[in-house]
Length: 88
Image (tube, rainbow, N blue to C red; front, side):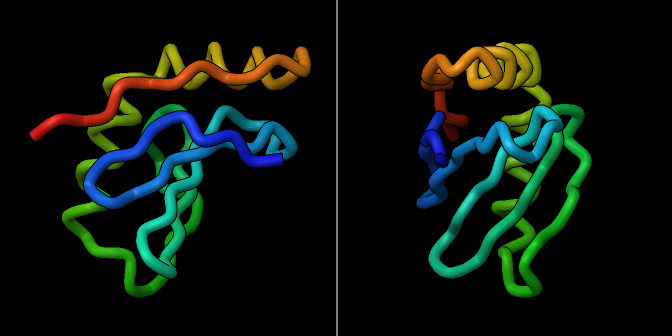
């Protein structure tokens, strides 16, 4: 079950505990990207805009501790907390 944790730049960011690594998944239109808690891109759609990738990696780097906390919460069957969006 996906849990939306943030939204910005027309991206919807969620996380799924089943991946077993603290990571976030973002959707932009029909494109997808998966980034782990350290900001490493695990997979990305061919047409995911590069400027969105950079902003998302920046957001993950800023909020990595909150992402890890949310990963732990999901492991305990708790809802993850919302994380502030990246502002311009």
